[in-house]
Image (cartoon, rainbow, N blue to C red):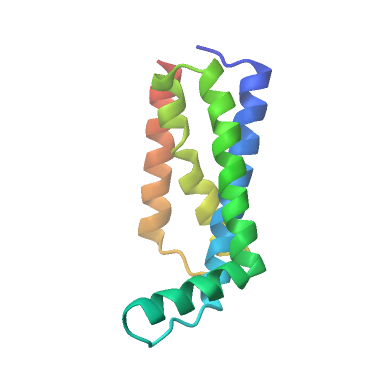
Length: 126
């Protein structure tokens, strides 16, 4: 099954929002200092810190935008095609974390993502 141009554009936008959202959430959590207070006080302190973080808010908003675009993609794409395509985010997040966050990615992880993408291509072409 060939996807329409509209479906491919929606998919690309959804993957961009997903990748950006994950990067922003990771960056925001790197600066997050978990409260050592116990019980509700600790929870309240953590919540206040989280909603004050512009990076965490942007990450969350990006994930909301991704969900909205994904709904549009699902509305025009069969689920048995869309589901496997969603695994492409593994590759995009791996690339972004390696290039932008300078995280070390082991050869096993590259191989694993390569196998996921290969499987996605097999399922998508059937």
